[in-house]
Length: 326
Image (cartoon, rainbow, N blue to C red; front, side, top):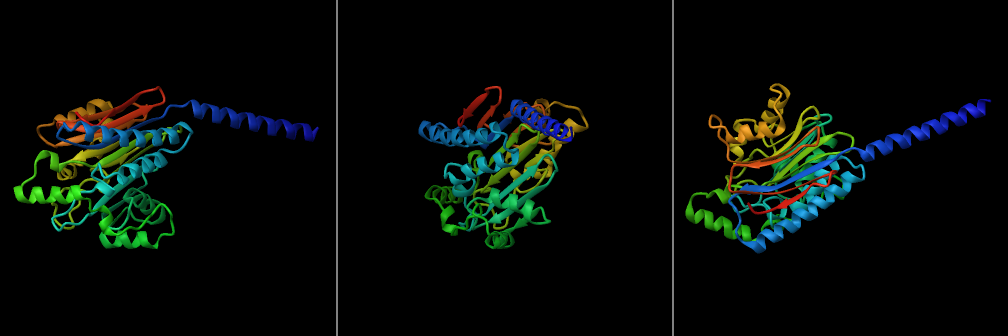
């Protein structure tokens, strides 16, 4: 009799586990990516090349989420792909400072726990987004910068944290771009933009957001924008939304833009779409750039007030968008 009861308990447990797994796999997921806001790109070959990378990144994120993987894993892996491409202002394609070097910033945030990690002014880490995640998981801190961040990376025995020579980031395109900007002595809208970011909602209902950038071309040594600042360029909270921003970083810092979207939803009961729209159109607190986001229901937004923003999105309903032009 006892054996029969034990067998029934085991069978019930297995059935329950299978039911939970089945329900989880039927749950919705969503992912959205940006590759920087700025001027619309007219070069068709360049647009096509960027869309190819966006598609690769989007597919990687969808593979993780569709199989029940976490939003944090999806965000990290998507941004790693964008960081490895010289076509975006992050990692390999990061812009140069006034001193002609690369100083890279990144942030990642877990909407379930509000845990977060960030790095700023990194010069030797191939994928700053992965280092930001290790700051979140392996330290009691939120933000490490400059030599301290590079030293922390060098101490990690982690295959995801690859150390490279600073020259790895120095592409001919960015060298020419810095020269052009210095000759003009002022920036155009196009040269102000270019950050990458990702927001994801997994089948467990957890949101995550991440952002990575080379910053502002011709920036002063040591300058940090909004990307490594929680609440400015990145924010995730399971009660409302996940947000990643791109644009003039100083604007997003001054107005705590990413957190403001959360606050409008949490306290003001605004919907994600209208909250982002209101902020981007605000005349009282003007910002220049764009935002991507996902709310806890899986609704996706991709908005910008510049001429263009590279972007991509997909979800469990079959939605699929990839645009690198306007």
